[in-house]
Length: 178
Picture 1 (cartoon, rainbow, N blue to C red):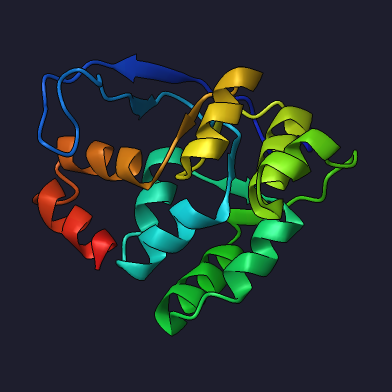
Picture 2 (picture 1 turned 90 degrees about the horizontal axis):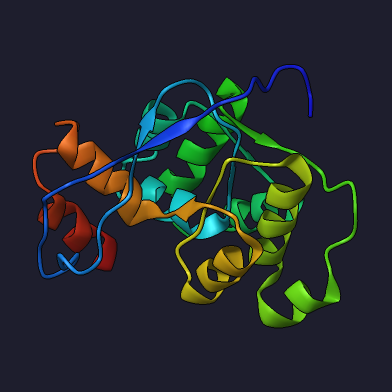
């Protein structure tokens, strides 16, 4: 792993918070930044947060992240001009970086997922990432099978609500749906 990526750790926080969107039967996983952890992202969490003007929450919670080339390509085609601009800024500021894969993506992943998800999971395994950002259920299921920790846009927003960075989760979720 490149020297500019120090080791990071995350601790699990328990929350008593529940709502219709996140029932109590699904205990939320809120990551508390205790150092710097290597995080890989798929397209949708970054894109969704950028569209609602909340991309900075990723930096605030996780510090920095890496994306594979397929995710960079998908993000560059985002139809939302403000989201594309936010991603360009994050990349030029250096807290989102593109990292090429050292090994080819397995055919199994390519057949089960889209290219961005497959590359994100492959990069997470190759870089020994502590966490991968995923929103799609098929990619999350595959990450769980591979033993890769994950969260998504809603997990980032939950953390932001619990730490007072956003006033209400419901409003942000509605913005995501629109």
